Image (cartoon, rainbow, N blue to C red; front, side, top):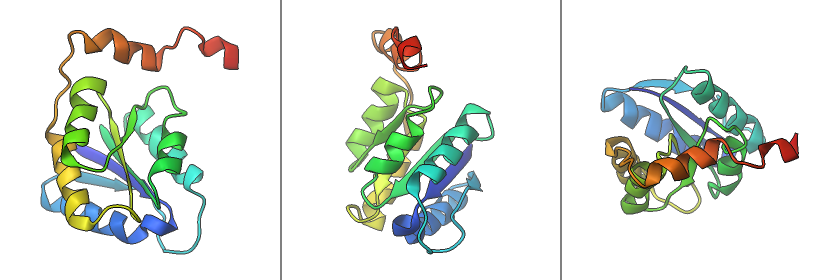
Length: 150
């Protein structure tokens, strides 16, 4: 699977470790930056990741910042993305099963590397259940009020 990964400076080290793990697990990794731990703005990298999902350069995404909150908000601005902030493998599995999340977000200041890897494995192994969740997920990408914000 091709997986895009992006972070801000606070999650730079976690990004490097997770990218290496993804490669070890046999995935193709699209590292969208940053390339150093110098201060950057998480929205810039969240938007890059969202664009990679939206235009098909990657099937899944991993968004990282200090808390995971800011970058997940940035990613979710793109209607092609369903980014879920997770802190444990169960929430990561549910993000896929119930919400068909295509991007997972984590906070480097809140999660250790072993838990982050466990979350990522659970997220990648998960499948969308469909059924009653299908119409709900459809509304996430096509809200009835979308034109109100244009």
